[in-house]
Image (cartoon, rainbow, N blue to C red; front, side, top):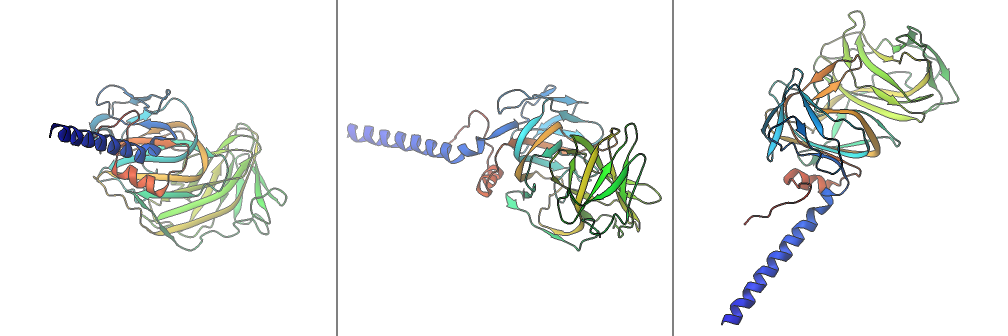
Length: 367
């Protein structure tokens, strides 16, 4: 009888060991490839530590508040001037994952950094590919419905009609170097000037409507150009994150809200105050008429972005986004468990992330 009990104990113990091992293997891949992971579980102090290894400890500025998160702890931001700054660049990013709890006053149907407030902000650029995005909200892949194209002469088919330039800039139609046949617009800037290249005569924008704006661009050298949406006459602006140009063609995609109804908007590229050339091509502006990626205010939401090409993040922060005029927009709400991966997570892995928080070094299995 005693030997039977011992055998049963050994069997139970072995079963538990196997179960724990199986559990570990099932979720091990979600740890692999992390190049940045801020749990935000510290609960006090002025630093947010990177648990994926290495440095890149975040510094809390203007005292965001430690609070209860989706899992353990989180940071709450007041929408005025609070944020977390990350000191070093992060390169080779393919997946960004974070939990967000926007305040009731925030508007984030896409969960992306919009023209008003910042969630997880990066000054980044793609290193190749079309930089197509797959978005997941609370474990489910998002789909969007787009309206008709609002731009004409998108690939500069015959000339640069509708486009103008000022403040030191000049532009020509380039039939040799382009992304989409037959031509691109080549813009040359002058040192020490604002350098604007802009298109007027856009169809009206609707207050509260969401738009998807994309184009291809490259530079004669690495440089930063600021895309802006403006209203003709009042010059009211919608700030979009700056684009870091490289010497190869890259696609840039933005989502933005129009904060007013306007019958006369225009696209504006504000070049650097240095003498360079840059090219733009294949522009597109469409209204997002439907989107399944709804984020619920005052509730924790899991947001994941997976790209088809690696990108690098510079001047990264949580809780704010830089505008192209050197000012910032801030989040009112909370952020938890920010992760960057150097690989594209699968839909299954995204689902696992949505249900479980696997920490950097260990996990606990409780019975």
